[in-house]
Length: 174
Image (cartoon, rainbow, N blue to C red; front, top):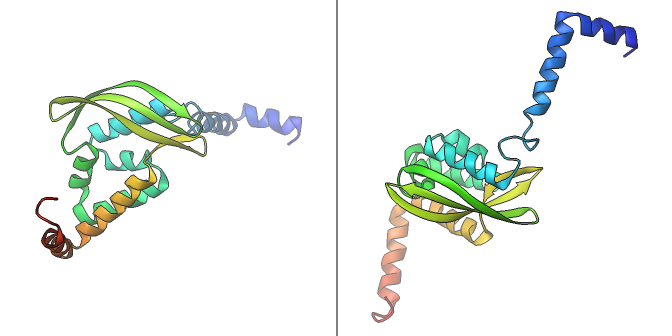
């Protein structure tokens, strides 16, 4: 673009609107000082979404594979139950970020929170993906979550397996 075209663009209302729009777009990009640019900000964004029972907001804060599993859980249990499970089995009240420990692209964020009126502390895991911190979990937890979703899909089959295991487990081990 030549200088005269740039000056003309700056003098026009449309030109100014385009420049302001581009500037705002750059400021609002995730990872550039946005709501998930640090593990603490990511934890706060996730917990605010859980507290507001904003399922889309929760999913937006999750790593892609965790988001896929939650989508599967939503299909099986419904939105309300999935939100409740993400809140630790109840309704999330007050929360406070206590600190974080970062190791490379992974972080644990320690949080004090209230679920169903009971105060507790816990750690949430976040993973930096494309300059954005997202809620994530260890592979073992993902495997457990996948198994849980599969069990929820066919509760009758799950009941039969559990009954079979009970019958095969020695009485002293139960």
